[in-house]
Length: 624
Image 1 (cartoon, rainbow, N blue to C red):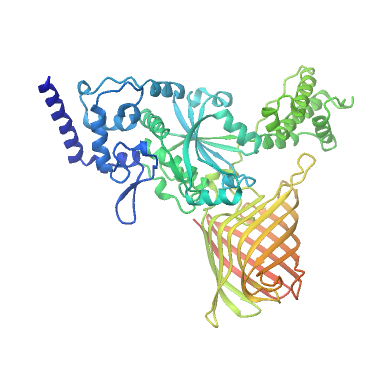
Image 2 (cartoon, rainbow, N blue to C red; image 1 turned 90 degrees about the vertical axis):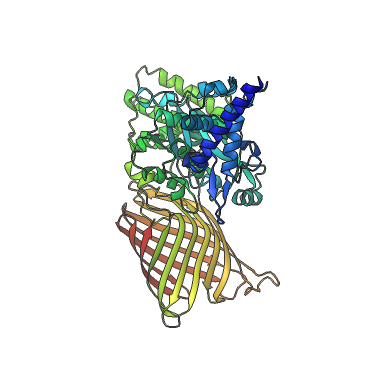
Protein backbone atom coordinates (compact mmCIF):
# COMPACT_ATOMS: atom_id res chain seq x y z
CA UNK A 1 0.00 0.00 0.00
CA UNK A 2 2.79 2.36 0.93
CA UNK A 3 4.61 1.43 -2.27
CA UNK A 4 1.50 2.28 -4.34
CA UNK A 5 1.16 5.63 -2.64
CA UNK A 6 4.84 6.36 -3.22
CA UNK A 7 4.47 5.41 -6.87
CA UNK A 8 1.41 7.70 -7.15
CA UNK A 9 3.30 10.57 -5.52
CA UNK A 10 6.19 10.08 -7.93
CA UNK A 11 3.78 10.18 -10.86
CA UNK A 12 2.22 13.38 -9.58
CA UNK A 13 5.66 14.99 -9.25
CA UNK A 14 6.48 13.96 -12.81
CA UNK A 15 3.32 15.63 -14.11
CA UNK A 16 4.20 18.79 -12.25
CA UNK A 17 7.79 18.63 -13.51
CA UNK A 18 6.56 18.25 -17.10
CA UNK A 19 4.18 21.18 -16.69
CA UNK A 20 6.94 23.38 -15.30
CA UNK A 21 9.45 22.26 -17.95
CA UNK A 22 6.94 23.11 -20.69
CA UNK A 23 6.24 26.42 -18.93
CA UNK A 24 2.52 25.80 -19.05
CA UNK A 25 2.10 28.47 -16.38
CA UNK A 26 3.00 31.02 -19.09
CA UNK A 27 0.81 29.46 -21.77
CA UNK A 28 -1.82 31.95 -23.06
CA UNK A 29 -4.58 29.51 -22.13
CA UNK A 30 -3.48 29.33 -18.50
CA UNK A 31 -3.01 33.09 -18.32
CA UNK A 32 -6.54 33.60 -19.69
CA UNK A 33 -8.03 30.98 -17.34
CA UNK A 34 -6.51 32.82 -14.38
CA UNK A 35 -7.34 36.29 -15.78
CA UNK A 36 -3.72 37.28 -15.16
CA UNK A 37 -2.36 40.63 -16.31
CA UNK A 38 1.14 42.07 -16.20
CA UNK A 39 1.55 44.91 -13.72
CA UNK A 40 3.53 48.05 -14.47
CA UNK A 41 6.44 46.45 -12.55
CA UNK A 42 6.40 43.29 -14.70
CA UNK A 43 4.76 41.05 -12.09
CA UNK A 44 1.60 39.00 -12.56
CA UNK A 45 -1.74 39.83 -10.94
CA UNK A 46 -5.12 38.25 -11.54
CA UNK A 47 -8.13 40.49 -12.09
CA UNK A 48 -10.27 37.94 -10.23
CA UNK A 49 -10.76 39.13 -6.65
CA UNK A 50 -12.64 36.28 -4.96
CA UNK A 51 -10.31 34.20 -2.79
CA UNK A 52 -12.01 30.92 -3.73
CA UNK A 53 -10.89 31.38 -7.34
CA UNK A 54 -7.39 30.32 -6.27
CA UNK A 55 -6.20 27.11 -4.67
CA UNK A 56 -2.98 28.74 -3.51
CA UNK A 57 -2.83 31.73 -1.18
CA UNK A 58 -0.26 33.13 -3.61
CA UNK A 59 -2.29 32.21 -6.68
CA UNK A 60 -3.58 35.71 -7.38
CA UNK A 61 -0.03 36.93 -8.01
CA UNK A 62 1.78 33.79 -9.14
CA UNK A 63 0.45 31.71 -12.07
CA UNK A 64 3.23 29.12 -11.59
CA UNK A 65 2.41 28.37 -7.97
CA UNK A 66 -1.32 28.30 -8.79
CA UNK A 67 -0.71 25.80 -11.58
CA UNK A 68 1.32 23.51 -9.31
CA UNK A 69 -1.30 23.74 -6.56
CA UNK A 70 -4.04 23.03 -9.09
CA UNK A 71 -2.30 19.91 -10.40
CA UNK A 72 -1.79 18.60 -6.89
CA UNK A 73 -5.40 19.34 -6.09
CA UNK A 74 -6.62 17.18 -8.98
CA UNK A 75 -5.06 14.12 -7.34
CA UNK A 76 -6.29 14.70 -3.79
CA UNK A 77 -8.94 12.43 -2.36
CA UNK A 78 -12.55 13.46 -2.92
CA UNK A 79 -14.49 14.75 0.10
CA UNK A 80 -18.11 14.16 0.98
CA UNK A 81 -19.04 17.67 -0.15
CA UNK A 82 -20.47 17.59 -3.68
CA UNK A 83 -18.52 19.62 -6.25
CA UNK A 84 -15.94 20.66 -3.66
CA UNK A 85 -13.09 18.77 -5.35
CA UNK A 86 -10.75 20.88 -7.56
CA UNK A 87 -11.75 18.82 -10.61
CA UNK A 88 -15.36 19.93 -10.01
CA UNK A 89 -14.49 23.49 -9.04
CA UNK A 90 -12.12 24.07 -11.96
CA UNK A 91 -13.28 21.85 -14.84
CA UNK A 92 -11.88 24.19 -17.53
CA UNK A 93 -8.43 24.04 -15.94
CA UNK A 94 -8.70 20.25 -15.73
CA UNK A 95 -9.81 19.90 -19.36
CA UNK A 96 -6.87 21.93 -20.61
CA UNK A 97 -4.19 20.41 -18.35
CA UNK A 98 -5.43 16.91 -19.07
CA UNK A 99 -5.15 17.58 -22.82
CA UNK A 100 -1.63 18.92 -22.34
CA UNK A 101 -0.32 16.24 -19.97
CA UNK A 102 -2.49 13.18 -20.75
CA UNK A 103 -3.08 12.48 -17.08
CA UNK A 104 -3.55 8.81 -16.21
CA UNK A 105 -7.21 8.53 -15.08
CA UNK A 106 -6.28 5.67 -12.72
CA UNK A 107 -4.35 8.15 -10.61
CA UNK A 108 -7.34 10.46 -10.21
CA UNK A 109 -10.03 10.15 -7.53
CA UNK A 110 -13.57 9.28 -8.50
CA UNK A 111 -15.60 12.50 -8.72
CA UNK A 112 -19.20 12.87 -9.86
CA UNK A 113 -19.62 16.68 -9.76
CA UNK A 114 -23.46 16.61 -9.67
CA UNK A 115 -23.91 20.39 -9.58
CA UNK A 116 -21.56 20.88 -12.52
CA UNK A 117 -23.35 18.20 -14.52
CA UNK A 118 -26.71 19.84 -13.77
CA UNK A 119 -25.31 23.20 -14.86
CA UNK A 120 -24.06 21.85 -18.18
CA UNK A 121 -27.31 19.99 -18.81
CA UNK A 122 -29.39 23.13 -18.19
CA UNK A 123 -27.21 25.23 -20.48
CA UNK A 124 -27.13 22.55 -23.18
CA UNK A 125 -24.78 24.82 -25.12
CA UNK A 126 -24.90 24.35 -28.90
CA UNK A 127 -23.57 27.79 -29.85
CA UNK A 128 -23.02 31.23 -28.36
CA UNK A 129 -24.12 34.72 -29.38
CA UNK A 130 -22.93 38.13 -28.23
CA UNK A 131 -25.84 40.53 -27.76
CA UNK A 132 -25.50 44.32 -27.92
CA UNK A 133 -28.30 46.32 -26.33
CA UNK A 134 -28.42 49.80 -27.82
CA UNK A 135 -27.78 53.05 -25.96
CA UNK A 136 -30.18 53.98 -23.16
CA UNK A 137 -29.46 57.45 -21.82
CA UNK A 138 -32.13 57.33 -19.11
CA UNK A 139 -30.01 54.87 -17.11
CA UNK A 140 -26.42 56.05 -16.49
CA UNK A 141 -25.11 52.49 -16.08
CA UNK A 142 -26.43 51.64 -19.58
CA UNK A 143 -25.88 54.96 -21.32
CA UNK A 144 -23.13 53.50 -23.52
CA UNK A 145 -25.16 50.37 -24.25
CA UNK A 146 -24.67 46.91 -22.78
CA UNK A 147 -23.27 43.57 -23.92
CA UNK A 148 -24.05 40.05 -22.76
CA UNK A 149 -23.76 36.53 -24.08
CA UNK A 150 -26.57 34.16 -25.00
CA UNK A 151 -25.92 30.43 -24.71
CA UNK A 152 -28.03 28.82 -27.44
CA UNK A 153 -29.64 25.44 -26.78
CA UNK A 154 -30.58 25.00 -30.42
CA UNK A 155 -28.43 25.51 -33.53
CA UNK A 156 -29.30 28.78 -35.27
CA UNK A 157 -30.46 26.96 -38.41
CA UNK A 158 -33.14 25.20 -36.37
CA UNK A 159 -34.02 28.10 -34.10
CA UNK A 160 -36.31 31.11 -34.27
CA UNK A 161 -37.05 34.19 -32.20
CA UNK A 162 -39.34 32.27 -29.84
CA UNK A 163 -36.93 29.41 -29.13
CA UNK A 164 -34.19 31.91 -28.32
CA UNK A 165 -36.24 33.29 -25.44
CA UNK A 166 -35.76 29.94 -23.67
CA UNK A 167 -31.96 30.21 -23.87
CA UNK A 168 -29.81 31.59 -21.08
CA UNK A 169 -28.28 35.03 -21.08
CA UNK A 170 -24.87 35.40 -19.43
CA UNK A 171 -24.64 38.83 -17.89
CA UNK A 172 -21.74 40.52 -16.13
CA UNK A 173 -22.77 43.42 -13.93
CA UNK A 174 -22.06 45.26 -10.70
CA UNK A 175 -23.86 44.20 -7.53
CA UNK A 176 -24.68 47.61 -6.00
CA UNK A 177 -25.25 48.10 -2.30
CA UNK A 178 -26.61 51.63 -2.77
CA UNK A 179 -28.60 53.58 -5.35
CA UNK A 180 -27.86 57.03 -3.92
CA UNK A 181 -26.49 58.69 -7.06
CA UNK A 182 -23.26 60.32 -5.75
CA UNK A 183 -22.17 57.23 -3.80
CA UNK A 184 -23.28 54.92 -6.61
CA UNK A 185 -21.18 56.86 -9.13
CA UNK A 186 -18.15 56.97 -6.82
CA UNK A 187 -18.24 53.25 -6.10
CA UNK A 188 -18.86 52.35 -9.73
CA UNK A 189 -15.87 54.39 -10.88
CA UNK A 190 -13.46 53.23 -8.17
CA UNK A 191 -14.11 49.49 -7.94
CA UNK A 192 -16.04 49.34 -4.67
CA UNK A 193 -18.82 47.25 -6.18
CA UNK A 194 -18.42 43.53 -6.79
CA UNK A 195 -18.91 42.45 -10.38
CA UNK A 196 -20.32 38.96 -10.97
CA UNK A 197 -21.39 36.74 -13.85
CA UNK A 198 -25.06 35.83 -13.69
CA UNK A 199 -27.08 33.27 -15.62
CA UNK A 200 -30.46 34.78 -16.51
CA UNK A 201 -33.24 33.50 -18.81
CA UNK A 202 -32.86 35.39 -22.07
CA UNK A 203 -36.54 36.27 -22.19
CA UNK A 204 -35.98 38.31 -19.01
CA UNK A 205 -33.28 40.42 -20.66
CA UNK A 206 -35.43 40.82 -23.79
CA UNK A 207 -38.29 41.99 -21.59
CA UNK A 208 -36.01 44.43 -19.77
CA UNK A 209 -34.16 45.87 -22.75
CA UNK A 210 -36.40 45.27 -25.77
CA UNK A 211 -39.70 46.08 -24.06
CA UNK A 212 -39.27 48.16 -20.89
CA UNK A 213 -36.47 50.38 -22.22
CA UNK A 214 -37.29 50.24 -25.96
CA UNK A 215 -33.75 49.24 -26.92
CA UNK A 216 -33.01 47.41 -30.15
CA UNK A 217 -30.89 44.28 -29.76
CA UNK A 218 -28.14 43.27 -32.17
CA UNK A 219 -27.11 39.62 -31.98
CA UNK A 220 -23.73 38.39 -33.24
CA UNK A 221 -23.31 34.61 -33.58
CA UNK A 222 -19.76 33.53 -32.73
CA UNK A 223 -17.96 30.89 -34.78
CA UNK A 224 -16.57 28.69 -31.97
CA UNK A 225 -15.61 25.05 -32.32
CA UNK A 226 -17.30 22.48 -30.03
CA UNK A 227 -14.09 22.27 -27.98
CA UNK A 228 -13.94 26.06 -27.61
CA UNK A 229 -17.62 26.20 -26.67
CA UNK A 230 -17.04 23.56 -24.00
CA UNK A 231 -14.10 25.52 -22.61
CA UNK A 232 -16.25 28.66 -22.44
CA UNK A 233 -19.10 26.96 -20.56
CA UNK A 234 -16.76 25.18 -18.14
CA UNK A 235 -14.98 28.43 -17.36
CA UNK A 236 -18.33 30.14 -16.91
CA UNK A 237 -18.96 27.62 -14.13
CA UNK A 238 -15.64 28.58 -12.56
CA UNK A 239 -16.50 32.28 -12.72
CA UNK A 240 -19.85 31.69 -11.06
CA UNK A 241 -18.00 31.12 -7.78
CA UNK A 242 -15.97 34.33 -7.73
CA UNK A 243 -16.21 38.07 -8.33
CA UNK A 244 -14.22 40.93 -9.82
CA UNK A 245 -13.92 44.47 -8.53
CA UNK A 246 -16.20 46.40 -10.90
CA UNK A 247 -14.84 49.49 -12.63
CA UNK A 248 -17.40 51.31 -14.79
CA UNK A 249 -14.78 52.71 -17.18
CA UNK A 250 -12.46 49.71 -17.52
CA UNK A 251 -13.34 46.31 -16.01
CA UNK A 252 -17.00 46.46 -16.95
CA UNK A 253 -19.48 44.25 -18.83
CA UNK A 254 -17.75 44.81 -22.17
CA UNK A 255 -14.30 43.94 -20.90
CA UNK A 256 -15.19 40.76 -19.02
CA UNK A 257 -17.50 39.39 -21.71
CA UNK A 258 -14.53 39.61 -24.09
CA UNK A 259 -12.21 38.03 -21.50
CA UNK A 260 -14.62 35.08 -21.30
CA UNK A 261 -14.55 34.66 -25.09
CA UNK A 262 -10.73 34.78 -24.99
CA UNK A 263 -10.74 31.78 -22.65
CA UNK A 264 -12.62 29.84 -25.32
CA UNK A 265 -9.94 30.74 -27.85
CA UNK A 266 -6.78 32.25 -26.29
CA UNK A 267 -5.41 33.08 -29.75
CA UNK A 268 -7.96 35.89 -30.00
CA UNK A 269 -6.71 39.41 -29.30
CA UNK A 270 -9.81 41.09 -27.89
CA UNK A 271 -9.29 42.81 -24.54
CA UNK A 272 -5.88 44.17 -25.48
CA UNK A 273 -7.40 46.15 -28.36
CA UNK A 274 -9.82 48.05 -26.11
CA UNK A 275 -9.28 51.73 -25.33
CA UNK A 276 -10.11 53.82 -22.30
CA UNK A 277 -12.91 54.06 -21.48
CA UNK A 278 -14.05 50.54 -22.39
CA UNK A 279 -17.47 50.83 -24.04
CA UNK A 280 -19.83 48.17 -25.46
CA UNK A 281 -19.61 49.44 -29.06
CA UNK A 282 -15.87 48.78 -29.01
CA UNK A 283 -16.61 45.24 -27.80
CA UNK A 284 -18.52 44.56 -31.00
CA UNK A 285 -15.81 46.15 -33.15
CA UNK A 286 -13.17 44.02 -31.41
CA UNK A 287 -15.03 40.90 -32.57
CA UNK A 288 -14.98 42.09 -36.18
CA UNK A 289 -11.25 42.72 -35.97
CA UNK A 290 -10.73 38.96 -35.56
CA UNK A 291 -10.95 37.03 -38.85
CA UNK A 292 -13.95 34.70 -39.19
CA UNK A 293 -15.12 35.11 -35.58
CA UNK A 294 -18.58 36.47 -36.48
CA UNK A 295 -20.71 33.78 -38.10
CA UNK A 296 -23.90 35.80 -38.57
CA UNK A 297 -25.75 38.95 -37.46
CA UNK A 298 -29.38 39.20 -36.35
CA UNK A 299 -31.61 42.06 -35.30
CA UNK A 300 -34.34 42.11 -32.66
CA UNK A 301 -36.27 45.41 -32.88
CA UNK A 302 -37.71 46.88 -29.70
CA UNK A 303 -41.42 47.22 -29.05
CA UNK A 304 -41.16 50.91 -29.87
CA UNK A 305 -39.39 50.23 -33.17
CA UNK A 306 -42.03 47.64 -34.12
CA UNK A 307 -44.85 50.03 -33.27
CA UNK A 308 -43.35 52.88 -35.30
CA UNK A 309 -42.98 50.54 -38.28
CA UNK A 310 -46.57 49.35 -37.97
CA UNK A 311 -47.98 52.86 -37.66
CA UNK A 312 -46.37 53.87 -40.98
CA UNK A 313 -48.87 51.68 -42.83
CA UNK A 314 -51.91 53.46 -41.41
CA UNK A 315 -53.48 56.42 -43.17
CA UNK A 316 -52.70 59.75 -41.48
CA UNK A 317 -56.33 60.64 -40.76
CA UNK A 318 -56.90 57.25 -39.08
CA UNK A 319 -53.82 57.18 -36.80
CA UNK A 320 -55.73 58.99 -34.04
CA UNK A 321 -57.88 55.85 -33.60
CA UNK A 322 -54.77 53.94 -32.50
CA UNK A 323 -54.28 56.20 -29.48
CA UNK A 324 -58.01 56.34 -28.70
CA UNK A 325 -58.36 52.54 -28.73
CA UNK A 326 -55.29 52.06 -26.58
CA UNK A 327 -56.88 54.34 -23.96
CA UNK A 328 -60.47 53.15 -24.43
CA UNK A 329 -60.82 49.67 -26.01
CA UNK A 330 -64.63 49.96 -25.92
CA UNK A 331 -64.51 52.61 -28.64
CA UNK A 332 -66.26 51.56 -31.87
CA UNK A 333 -64.48 52.19 -35.14
CA UNK A 334 -66.48 53.93 -37.91
CA UNK A 335 -68.18 51.65 -40.41
CA UNK A 336 -66.40 53.49 -43.22
CA UNK A 337 -63.10 51.89 -42.18
CA UNK A 338 -62.39 48.67 -44.08
CA UNK A 339 -61.74 45.34 -42.37
CA UNK A 340 -58.03 45.42 -43.32
CA UNK A 341 -57.70 48.94 -41.92
CA UNK A 342 -59.39 47.82 -38.68
CA UNK A 343 -56.88 44.98 -38.41
CA UNK A 344 -53.97 47.36 -38.89
CA UNK A 345 -55.38 49.84 -36.35
CA UNK A 346 -56.04 47.14 -33.74
CA UNK A 347 -52.61 45.59 -34.25
CA UNK A 348 -51.00 48.99 -33.79
CA UNK A 349 -53.13 49.68 -30.70
CA UNK A 350 -52.02 46.38 -29.18
CA UNK A 351 -48.40 47.32 -29.86
CA UNK A 352 -48.96 50.73 -28.31
CA UNK A 353 -50.39 49.15 -25.14
CA UNK A 354 -47.42 46.77 -24.99
CA UNK A 355 -45.07 49.71 -25.44
CA UNK A 356 -46.72 52.10 -22.97
CA UNK A 357 -47.52 49.51 -20.29
CA UNK A 358 -44.52 47.20 -20.79
CA UNK A 359 -43.46 47.02 -17.15
CA UNK A 360 -46.97 47.07 -15.73
CA UNK A 361 -48.05 44.15 -17.93
CA UNK A 362 -45.41 42.00 -16.25
CA UNK A 363 -45.56 43.27 -12.67
CA UNK A 364 -49.25 44.23 -12.34
CA UNK A 365 -51.32 41.68 -14.30
CA UNK A 366 -54.55 43.18 -12.88
CA UNK A 367 -53.68 46.74 -13.90
CA UNK A 368 -55.17 48.99 -16.54
CA UNK A 369 -52.70 47.95 -19.20
CA UNK A 370 -53.66 44.27 -18.97
CA UNK A 371 -57.37 45.09 -19.00
CA UNK A 372 -57.02 47.28 -22.09
CA UNK A 373 -54.92 44.66 -23.85
CA UNK A 374 -57.45 41.92 -23.08
CA UNK A 375 -60.34 43.94 -24.52
CA UNK A 376 -58.32 44.83 -27.63
CA UNK A 377 -57.38 41.18 -28.15
CA UNK A 378 -61.07 40.22 -28.02
CA UNK A 379 -61.85 42.83 -30.66
CA UNK A 380 -58.98 41.67 -32.80
CA UNK A 381 -59.96 37.99 -32.51
CA UNK A 382 -63.49 38.79 -33.64
CA UNK A 383 -62.21 39.80 -37.09
CA UNK A 384 -61.16 36.18 -37.81
CA UNK A 385 -58.37 37.13 -40.20
CA UNK A 386 -54.63 36.72 -39.56
CA UNK A 387 -52.35 39.75 -39.55
CA UNK A 388 -49.67 40.15 -42.13
CA UNK A 389 -46.20 39.46 -40.73
CA UNK A 390 -44.34 42.57 -39.69
CA UNK A 391 -41.29 42.32 -41.94
CA UNK A 392 -38.79 44.66 -40.36
CA UNK A 393 -35.42 44.48 -42.07
CA UNK A 394 -32.28 45.20 -40.03
CA UNK A 395 -31.29 48.86 -40.57
CA UNK A 396 -27.82 48.35 -42.01
CA UNK A 397 -26.90 51.98 -41.47
CA UNK A 398 -27.39 51.45 -37.72
CA UNK A 399 -25.15 48.39 -37.36
CA UNK A 400 -22.91 49.10 -34.39
CA UNK A 401 -19.68 47.79 -35.91
CA UNK A 402 -20.00 50.21 -38.86
CA UNK A 403 -20.02 53.29 -36.64
CA UNK A 404 -17.14 55.73 -36.36
CA UNK A 405 -14.38 55.16 -33.79
CA UNK A 406 -15.16 56.10 -30.20
CA UNK A 407 -12.05 58.30 -29.78
CA UNK A 408 -11.79 61.50 -31.78
CA UNK A 409 -8.86 63.84 -32.27
CA UNK A 410 -8.90 67.01 -34.32
CA UNK A 411 -6.73 69.92 -35.27
CA UNK A 412 -7.04 72.93 -37.52
CA UNK A 413 -7.01 76.70 -37.79
CA UNK A 414 -9.17 79.24 -36.01
CA UNK A 415 -9.67 83.00 -35.84
CA UNK A 416 -11.38 85.05 -33.14
CA UNK A 417 -11.84 88.73 -32.45
CA UNK A 418 -9.74 89.05 -29.29
CA UNK A 419 -6.40 87.28 -29.71
CA UNK A 420 -6.84 86.61 -33.45
CA UNK A 421 -5.22 83.50 -35.01
CA UNK A 422 -4.98 80.19 -33.19
CA UNK A 423 -4.37 76.50 -33.73
CA UNK A 424 -7.36 74.46 -32.57
CA UNK A 425 -6.80 71.15 -30.79
CA UNK A 426 -9.67 68.80 -29.88
CA UNK A 427 -9.66 65.42 -28.13
CA UNK A 428 -12.61 63.25 -27.10
CA UNK A 429 -12.37 59.84 -25.43
CA UNK A 430 -15.91 58.83 -26.39
CA UNK A 431 -18.44 58.62 -28.05
CA UNK A 432 -20.74 60.68 -30.31
CA UNK A 433 -22.29 64.10 -30.78
CA UNK A 434 -25.20 65.41 -32.83
CA UNK A 435 -22.98 66.34 -35.78
CA UNK A 436 -20.87 63.18 -35.97
CA UNK A 437 -21.51 60.72 -38.85
CA UNK A 438 -24.69 58.85 -37.96
CA UNK A 439 -23.88 55.43 -39.43
CA UNK A 440 -24.12 53.03 -36.50
CA UNK A 441 -25.69 55.67 -34.25
CA UNK A 442 -29.04 57.31 -33.54
CA UNK A 443 -29.98 60.77 -34.81
CA UNK A 444 -31.26 61.72 -31.39
CA UNK A 445 -28.46 61.50 -28.90
CA UNK A 446 -25.16 63.03 -27.88
CA UNK A 447 -22.98 61.24 -25.36
CA UNK A 448 -19.48 62.59 -24.82
CA UNK A 449 -16.90 61.72 -22.22
CA UNK A 450 -13.78 63.84 -21.62
CA UNK A 451 -14.35 66.12 -24.59
CA UNK A 452 -11.45 68.60 -24.54
CA UNK A 453 -10.98 71.75 -26.67
CA UNK A 454 -7.82 73.87 -26.62
CA UNK A 455 -6.50 76.93 -28.45
CA UNK A 456 -2.84 77.70 -29.14
CA UNK A 457 -2.63 81.39 -30.08
CA UNK A 458 -0.09 81.96 -32.80
CA UNK A 459 0.99 85.53 -31.96
CA UNK A 460 1.56 85.30 -28.21
CA UNK A 461 2.05 81.50 -27.93
CA UNK A 462 -0.52 81.30 -25.15
CA UNK A 463 -2.35 77.99 -24.63
CA UNK A 464 -5.97 78.10 -23.46
CA UNK A 465 -8.14 75.23 -22.27
CA UNK A 466 -11.41 76.37 -23.79
CA UNK A 467 -13.63 73.46 -22.71
CA UNK A 468 -13.31 70.21 -20.79
CA UNK A 469 -16.54 68.24 -20.51
CA UNK A 470 -16.27 65.31 -18.13
CA UNK A 471 -19.66 64.23 -19.45
CA UNK A 472 -22.06 65.86 -21.91
CA UNK A 473 -25.41 64.22 -22.68
CA UNK A 474 -28.21 65.34 -24.98
CA UNK A 475 -31.19 62.99 -25.25
CA UNK A 476 -33.81 64.01 -27.82
CA UNK A 477 -37.19 62.27 -28.08
CA UNK A 478 -39.46 63.51 -30.90
CA UNK A 479 -42.97 64.36 -29.72
CA UNK A 480 -45.82 62.47 -31.34
CA UNK A 481 -49.38 61.51 -30.44
CA UNK A 482 -47.92 58.20 -29.27
CA UNK A 483 -44.98 59.43 -27.21
CA UNK A 484 -44.82 62.64 -25.19
CA UNK A 485 -41.50 61.90 -23.45
CA UNK A 486 -39.41 65.00 -22.77
CA UNK A 487 -35.98 65.71 -24.22
CA UNK A 488 -33.18 66.62 -21.84
CA UNK A 489 -29.53 67.58 -21.53
CA UNK A 490 -26.86 67.39 -18.85
CA UNK A 491 -23.22 68.41 -18.78
CA UNK A 492 -20.48 68.63 -16.19
CA UNK A 493 -17.08 70.16 -16.83
CA UNK A 494 -15.14 73.40 -17.08
CA UNK A 495 -15.17 76.41 -19.44
CA UNK A 496 -13.07 79.48 -20.09
CA UNK A 497 -15.63 82.28 -19.93
CA UNK A 498 -15.83 85.48 -21.97
CA UNK A 499 -19.10 86.97 -20.78
CA UNK A 500 -18.32 90.63 -20.17
CA UNK A 501 -18.35 90.21 -16.39
CA UNK A 502 -15.48 87.74 -16.19
CA UNK A 503 -13.22 87.42 -19.22
CA UNK A 504 -10.78 84.50 -19.58
CA UNK A 505 -12.08 83.05 -16.30
CA UNK A 506 -11.84 79.29 -15.82
CA UNK A 507 -15.07 78.07 -14.23
CA UNK A 508 -16.65 74.77 -13.35
CA UNK A 509 -19.96 74.27 -15.16
CA UNK A 510 -23.02 72.14 -14.46
CA UNK A 511 -25.92 72.35 -16.92
CA UNK A 512 -29.32 70.72 -16.78
CA UNK A 513 -32.23 71.28 -19.12
CA UNK A 514 -35.43 69.76 -20.41
CA UNK A 515 -37.88 70.43 -23.22
CA UNK A 516 -39.33 69.17 -26.46
CA UNK A 517 -38.17 67.88 -29.86
CA UNK A 518 -39.86 67.61 -33.24
CA UNK A 519 -38.61 65.55 -36.20
CA UNK A 520 -39.58 65.67 -39.89
CA UNK A 521 -38.86 63.82 -43.16
CA UNK A 522 -37.74 60.56 -41.57
CA UNK A 523 -35.67 62.45 -38.97
CA UNK A 524 -33.69 64.36 -41.63
CA UNK A 525 -34.74 67.60 -39.93
CA UNK A 526 -34.82 67.84 -36.14
CA UNK A 527 -35.60 70.89 -34.05
CA UNK A 528 -35.50 71.11 -30.27
CA UNK A 529 -36.09 73.70 -27.54
CA UNK A 530 -35.11 73.15 -23.91
CA UNK A 531 -35.39 75.22 -20.76
CA UNK A 532 -31.86 75.43 -19.39
CA UNK A 533 -30.28 76.00 -15.98
CA UNK A 534 -26.58 76.65 -15.43
CA UNK A 535 -24.45 76.69 -12.29
CA UNK A 536 -20.94 78.15 -12.56
CA UNK A 537 -18.17 78.03 -9.99
CA UNK A 538 -14.97 80.10 -9.93
CA UNK A 539 -12.88 81.94 -7.32
CA UNK A 540 -13.38 85.02 -9.54
CA UNK A 541 -17.10 85.13 -8.65
CA UNK A 542 -18.29 87.22 -5.71
CA UNK A 543 -21.99 87.74 -6.38
CA UNK A 544 -23.04 85.46 -3.46
CA UNK A 545 -20.61 86.84 -0.91
CA UNK A 546 -18.10 84.14 0.04
CA UNK A 547 -19.70 81.57 -2.24
CA UNK A 548 -17.79 81.44 -5.57
CA UNK A 549 -20.95 80.59 -7.52
CA UNK A 550 -23.08 82.04 -10.26
CA UNK A 551 -26.48 80.70 -11.36
CA UNK A 552 -28.39 81.32 -14.55
CA UNK A 553 -31.47 80.18 -16.42
CA UNK A 554 -32.80 80.48 -19.93
CA UNK A 555 -33.25 78.44 -23.08
CA UNK A 556 -31.22 76.20 -25.35
CA UNK A 557 -32.27 75.03 -28.79
CA UNK A 558 -31.19 73.89 -32.18
CA UNK A 559 -32.03 72.96 -35.75
CA UNK A 560 -30.30 69.90 -37.24
CA UNK A 561 -30.22 68.93 -40.93
CA UNK A 562 -29.06 65.43 -41.88
CA UNK A 563 -28.21 66.01 -45.52
CA UNK A 564 -26.96 62.42 -45.68
CA UNK A 565 -25.34 60.02 -43.20
CA UNK A 566 -21.96 61.70 -43.71
CA UNK A 567 -22.94 65.37 -43.99
CA UNK A 568 -24.75 67.14 -41.14
CA UNK A 569 -25.47 70.76 -40.31
CA UNK A 570 -26.40 71.82 -36.78
CA UNK A 571 -27.32 75.36 -35.76
CA UNK A 572 -27.64 75.68 -31.99
CA UNK A 573 -28.01 78.60 -29.66
CA UNK A 574 -28.65 79.57 -26.08
CA UNK A 575 -29.89 82.57 -24.16
CA UNK A 576 -29.17 82.71 -20.43
CA UNK A 577 -29.90 85.22 -17.68
CA UNK A 578 -27.59 85.56 -14.66
CA UNK A 579 -29.48 87.87 -12.29
CA UNK A 580 -26.55 88.58 -9.95
CA UNK A 581 -23.86 89.61 -12.42
CA UNK A 582 -23.30 92.97 -14.09
CA UNK A 583 -23.97 91.89 -17.67
CA UNK A 584 -26.77 89.52 -16.91
CA UNK A 585 -27.84 88.43 -20.40
CA UNK A 586 -25.52 85.98 -22.19
CA UNK A 587 -26.39 84.67 -25.63
CA UNK A 588 -24.57 82.50 -28.13
CA UNK A 589 -25.20 81.04 -31.61
CA UNK A 590 -23.09 78.21 -33.06
CA UNK A 591 -23.46 76.76 -36.57
CA UNK A 592 -21.51 73.50 -37.21
CA UNK A 593 -21.10 71.70 -40.54
CA UNK A 594 -19.35 68.29 -40.52
CA UNK A 595 -18.59 66.08 -43.52
CA UNK A 596 -17.12 62.59 -43.26
CA UNK A 597 -15.43 62.46 -46.66
CA UNK A 598 -13.51 59.26 -45.83
CA UNK A 599 -14.29 56.54 -43.31
CA UNK A 600 -13.38 57.89 -39.85
CA UNK A 601 -12.04 61.18 -41.29
CA UNK A 602 -14.20 64.30 -41.28
CA UNK A 603 -13.89 67.98 -42.11
CA UNK A 604 -15.47 70.31 -39.55
CA UNK A 605 -16.42 73.95 -40.17
CA UNK A 606 -17.95 75.90 -37.31
CA UNK A 607 -18.52 79.39 -35.99
CA UNK A 608 -19.58 81.02 -32.76
CA UNK A 609 -21.11 84.44 -32.15
CA UNK A 610 -21.92 85.67 -28.66
CA UNK A 611 -22.56 89.02 -27.05
CA UNK A 612 -18.82 89.35 -26.24
CA UNK A 613 -16.85 87.46 -28.91
CA UNK A 614 -16.93 85.64 -32.21
CA UNK A 615 -14.74 82.97 -33.73
CA UNK A 616 -14.49 80.55 -36.63
CA UNK A 617 -12.80 77.16 -36.85
CA UNK A 618 -11.86 74.75 -39.62
CA UNK A 619 -10.64 71.35 -38.41
CA UNK A 620 -10.00 67.84 -39.59
CA UNK A 621 -11.25 65.09 -37.27
CA UNK A 622 -9.94 61.55 -37.06
CA UNK A 623 -12.04 58.86 -35.32
CA UNK A 624 -10.35 55.75 -33.97
